[in-house]
Length: 298
Image 1 (cartoon, helix red, strand yellow):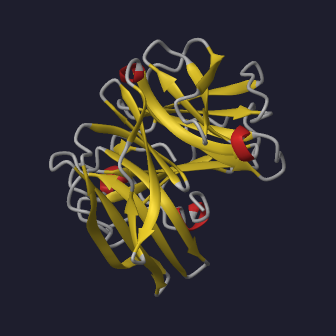
Image 2 (tube, rainbow, N blue to C red):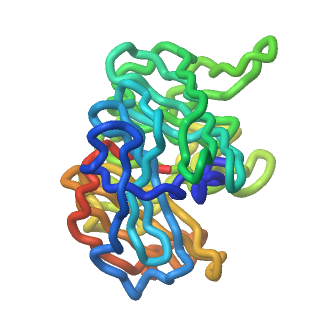
């Protein structure tokens, strides 16, 4: 569900620096670098919020970069962490439900967005942001692996369970999975779940301040049991956002989009996303794209 509306999210192209007012859009040019190591069938995108609360989407698809925005898609604040819960849509309509951690009030919000293609242009026709749970102060990263939500705050990693109480969506009390070392994790993104029963695990990838690209495997039944592998030992420290995508003609592979706070981005291709090995990851820098809005791993 979390990547099901990626195509819709990039339907309207815009130059981020040209969005002086939400919904004022213009064309975008091609990528500053078309990397031959990344197949043309690979696509990956991520959500971002500009300082005035305008939502953007950054994408790399068909060896082209784009920045997209919708009319009236302004949350009014910039989440400290953000993650899609689910979404659905078609060529003319979409719905999306997301987590957004507030930067100052200590709450995580459920953000519901509804978009429609009107006279050839996309616009947000309905948006709500409702408080879901308190205790989310200092949240840096959210990663959802339904029915679980992972949260990085301070030195710790937490897990919440998504539940329905009297038909109302809510989150359980947190379970602390680890209390040290997570302040060195810059990004964390849910990749997949594997196994069954007591052997079922959630697989997440992310980057660390020491430059590592790393994979974590969290046992669903006993979540304090966490194993990890280093996919790459250096070169990934600068990324503040890491997202994964798909390659239609390479179903075993994945695209990785890394964005730096400076506005530079890199794209990579992992030929085998499930082998726990990083030697087959190729790609590189796209240069400075001006992608300076706060981006979130998806």
